[in-house]
Image (cartoon, rainbow, N blue to C red; front, side):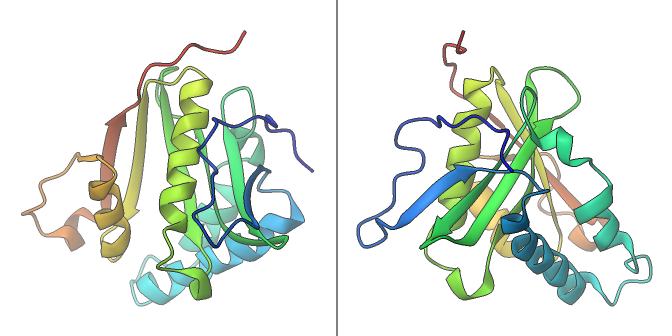
Length: 188
């Protein structure tokens, strides 16, 4: 089931040479195609944070229950899947954050066996383009202190940390970032 817009920013979903069978499609966290990615994300949280006392149940709550699927659907959100030969291999979404001009990226994920191919960059770029198309001018996101790859990705993509990188990251736990989006003309 897909209620997200069918038209994405031109070029945002373009596959690199050799991956022409890849395509980014609008979806929903309710879509059965999204379930393997959400389960993978839940497993990743368990592997990285499962030894922490407050973790039990928190990861599942975050992935499945904290935000309703509708939050990731138009008119205020989107959820995208990157399909390779029809198989979901990466994805993510955004929803409205604290104000009408800020989107919050959530549930960015690449399947384990498809990492180190630039797929997360493609998903984040496509989400940014779709957020800009919907009129958002700023993107906010958080990652966990045990996800240095994600923090490095957001740095590379021009996100500004909203925390002191010299601080004890374990004490901070969540690492917030923001990025201004290029202004676009909102679709009529």
